[in-house]
Length: 324
Image (cartoon, rainbow, N blue to C red; front, side):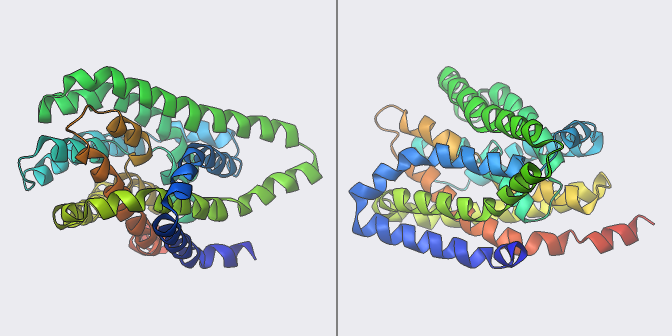
């Protein structure tokens, strides 16, 4: 039954997005109140995901030197260059360019893990990379903004929000999952209870999509003119991310399941973390908020497509045949 739920998950997500868009349009005041539930839902989603991975496998994930190298090179060397090139096609509007740089420069550290799990990527390796990714973001994102847009003054704000994300969306759910594993160890009925938590990622992700769609539809409606520039740019980014994952997976001779981690990691961005940064920007830069919102909605559609494409582009059988 659980496999059936995961098989039809895309339809559930699409229904959640449509329901969220309807609620955001018909009752915007109520929908905006749901925004406060977003981070708790993400934390619960990650907790349920983390409980499906024995903690001992996370240490093995950190030992995957080829994967870690490919992920760092892709996320923090190649992708910033790709983003810089895409930004050159935008109008010379500082707020517009700042929004695009904020949302595309750093990789996702929350629902990317759930998409990796649902897309049958190597989840322990993905989880082990997440703290490394966040620490690199703390250091490099202010540097990127200074190099690309002369925004070094945002460094303190960026570091504060990224630290909050590290604690609230990584450390707390991971610690709770570890305590759950210790509590269930050696007790069959408790272990069955932990296994039952594997039912939760799909419905919880649907709830996250519902909240995002309902809370963001107003921003999109008010900035429809930006869609002409931004949707093709964000779609191009997703295509470049998928091609980059394929190339690096081959260059570093990664197993198929680690190649899938690269694909979901390169394609998903830290929109839920940078949205508070965009909201805290001074007057005159409000367009950056709409940019982050539009990217998150395009990414939703992209990740649903990735769930269909990535296992086919990184097939286990083909990888095993190629390494014999």
